[in-house]
Length: 427
Image (tube, rainbow, N blue to C red; front, side):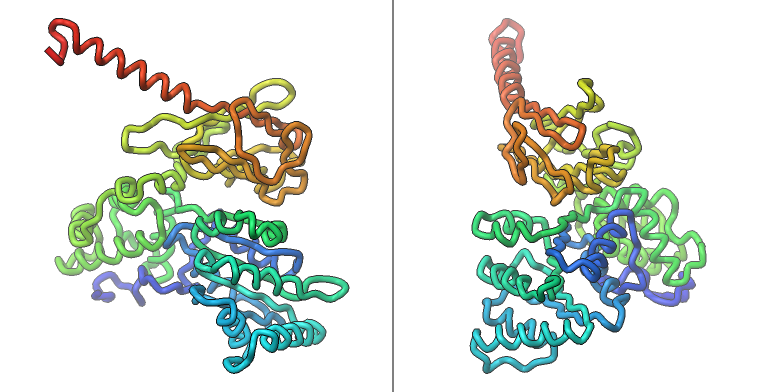
């Protein structure tokens, strides 16, 4: 690309995870803060999930770059390994050459090294990226490593980062002991359309735009429609659009340049390419409405909620939320999908995971927990009429699958009856 044409110092939309270009949306800032908290609190795992290309690796690189000298890090990126290979990889990161060691020797070496460095005043952090690829056997090794401790605290801080299916793996009954040690789970969503625009402008500014308009104001909505706010897709489309403009010797990018890039990439709109994953993209227009439904609707015509929840306090309904397939995060801060402003509610208190067949509510290691029938629950399959206590609020779950099915059958029967009438479409 001709950088002189755009008066830039460097390429603004490279796919490499360069911390210099990190744009901290509210969600990215929270995820980074949670990773930083592991340095100070060695009391459990932190799990960061996000879709492919949402910025997890760039976030990790930024976190690593900002660590102080007293922190020793082992970073594992190759996760399709056996338990023996995993332990060897950790020791390699700590400066050993352990390839002839047997498993017992690997574990003893790791234990001795971690205790030695802890006693020397160092903090030790293990970061595992692409953790969704770890087998249950390797995850059990991770749990055992987390158990190395002194009389005062755990020695090794652990961050697991991966795609959303990592949560499903961690929730397996065989890994319950590991799941109980998870202090925080956080899902990194795609950018909203407003955040995506700020993201593009931020990267251009870092590259040397000095506030010049390089992308036309009418291009951002089009870019969002085809990228869904996923940073990696945004980089790819913006870079290709700049190439298309440069080929015409244009120093600004128009809608025509973006369309030319889309033709070259042969992309369809994000919703049609990703199906239900669109449901993880947050809606700007709805997010500012108190108590409104911030979940984007499917664009395939199936605009029918699976269920809904009523939020009640003091015997009256405060708000109502329709549930579509996807994930809904509930907590005290505005960045949650459903905000409950109460000191009895944690920042990220719980989540509801909805599929076509079921809805599950899961406690996110909150301080005060969630309660059903006066008993604290960590994980519960919701049934029609369930009342979940969250601090001084109640969530009332209403399953609408049966109603939707009955409505569809009645509609089909009515259509069939109409076809049998004279003049109907079937005659």
